[in-house]
Length: 308
View 1 (cartoon, helix red, strand yellow):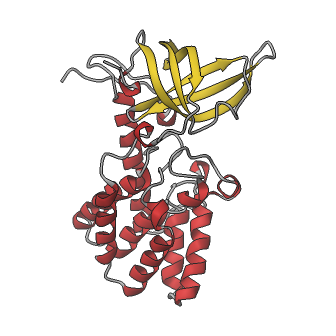
View 2 (cartoon, one colour; view 1 turned 30 degrees about the vertical axis):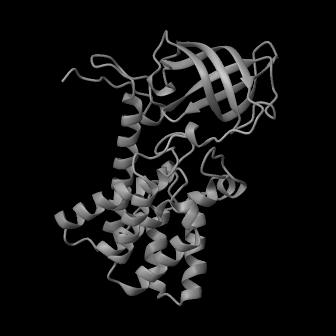
View 3 (cartoon, one colour; view 1 turned 180 degrees about the horizontal axis):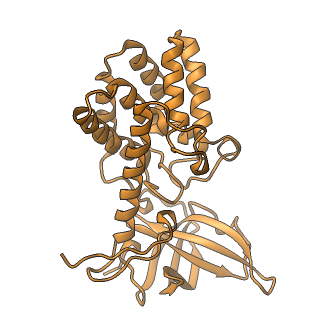
């Protein structure tokens, strides 16, 4: 039986068809070129090096290849020591090689649209609905990130759905929170990832993504749409603040610090859901009684999986 990438452990071998998710050029200490390839199937991904090659056209993203090699430990992370790789020239459906959110796209859309309908403030509801409608296909298929959290097909919508459930619970626990503001902030906070990233399957950062980032892109989008709809200025400003401050601190990429309780809560539930997703990803394939690899996005820590 073929072992999927997500189940590979150190010492295992890979010998199967996989997709190139990412391809980067590098230069070794001896001056020779190499490629870093991220290989994936529907279960996960693994990094490998292709030495003495800089051909990113041949080994391009979304290419299906047959790869063989042995899984090794490299500085606390699993890496494939590549023995053989060959390009599959005929056209192949890449869908079976793409990792997706654990919830179907149709369910994600129904749930998120249900939350939009539940908004009581007419102007907030119209503004949120219009922005989502303008990016509908991408919003429900794009990942939430290139590598770290919810970096899967429909990962953005899955991240939003999880945060909406957290937000609803927090509003019940703390009735002083303005539910409409918080729910709208959750739906909008990462929506501009569909502009920041290139596509739903093998995302890379776009020019706008690199130079502007999704916080400022979303604030600009809200400005344009709210002017078209004639939205009250305070409503627009509050939603822009939620978006611009949701990373919490400037050193974490935030354009401003939260200055509303709803903005503070948005920052916390975003952080909770992102970090828990990274924990889940880190624990995949890890046996009880052992440690994960070091997770750079979680302060470069390794985490123990209890036998409990």
